[in-house]
Image 1 (cartoon, rainbow, N blue to C red):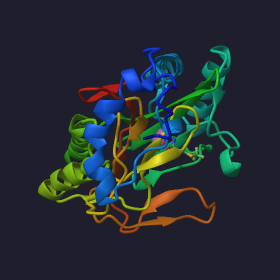
Image 2: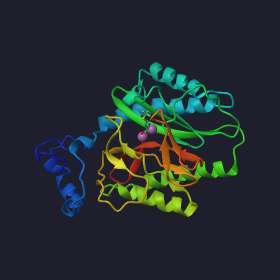
Image 3: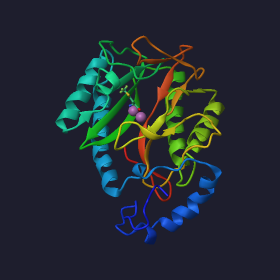
Length: 289
Ligand code: MF3
Ligand code: CO
Ligand code: CO
């Protein structure tokens, strides 16, 4: 399992041989899924405690940036101003902003306003009273990636916008709370989608959460919508994001000519929150908190 040799050191970081550590429980927990044809993670997706610690340190930088944005954002501030802060704070911490030059992305963070779902590109747009905005920051520190986003509000926002933001946050935490080791990753999306249906919101399908930590985007794909596909089994030591994009209207989106900016197709408001989490022996621990 996970292509582990029986005499290799166990993936859990105990320092023991696999055969005298997790081999038996892995087999017990995973064999029914294996025979049912569920994908089982490759060994490279199981991180050891030192690597998790590296991601935690990276996350400290991302968190400090998000907090600082909370202190400077307001009417008249441009998304370029936010980008400049991300760029400066990341450099001062000795890190690299992962978005910059990622498949040609031109800036250090994503800034997505109102009916922009995600991947908005910072520019000289001034924030105005009533806007809601998602800022998505991914820091690389010593090779470790931490990916997170938050919503911010400008001045007086509508009751509908307030509800969408709070409920989307609730759905992110619901997805995280759903995580148990040896569970198919699709359960996260099933829980989120059920809740979104209760609220009458659309769950974006075109973009998803992902494995993260040693790379920006790796397996598994974390869908936020309902699916009965045989999805990858989560095991302790896997690191992934939960980052539902929830629309006040329908789930459908369109991509602008810049080939990055994703908008709701019906023009409705969209919200998103994102955390990086590690699967543990009992559930999930949030690293970006
Ligand atoms: N941070 C985004 C995510 O949550 C990815 C942004 S890709 C970029 O996965 F190139 F637009 F930065
Ligand atoms: Co992400
Ligand atoms: Co992100």
